[in-house]
Image 1: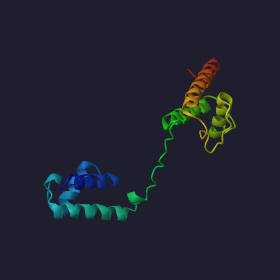
Image 2 (image 1 turned 180 degrees about the horizontal axis):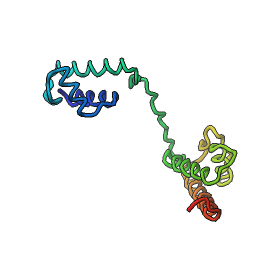
Image 3 (image 1 turned 30 degrees about the vertical axis):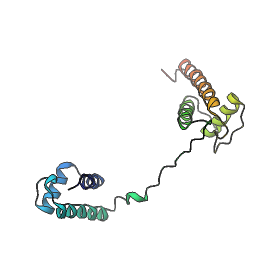
Image 4 (image 1 turned 45 degrees about the vertical axis):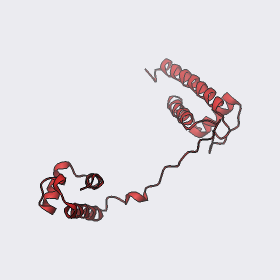
Length: 160
């Protein structure tokens, strides 16, 4: 048995919610072998086939290939980095928790970009025109906003 086949068996068992003991009972019932390590090629395929059949019968899971791939973010030299964007959003969500408003997070991010950097932004892509240096300035400005909101929340007794 290859390492890939062993991982496949354990992955399928995990998908079915089986623990190690239940998997070993299934392997023993299908092949008569007590240890997964001792399976030969034919027995390995029998176990994988049985696990796949049980997944189909349970209807619990769609095939892994149907999962939507993550959107790959392109890095443009000189522009704000994905890590800077992530940090800005993290602070914005925290700010929205500290000071709830009627505006969405995207609208509030656009407002912060306009106030701190003087750039008019679109809520669909607020960082489109922000370069690397402006990204640093935006992060520092958001830190100040969060710090002020935390102090206000502590004064009002909403945060300890």
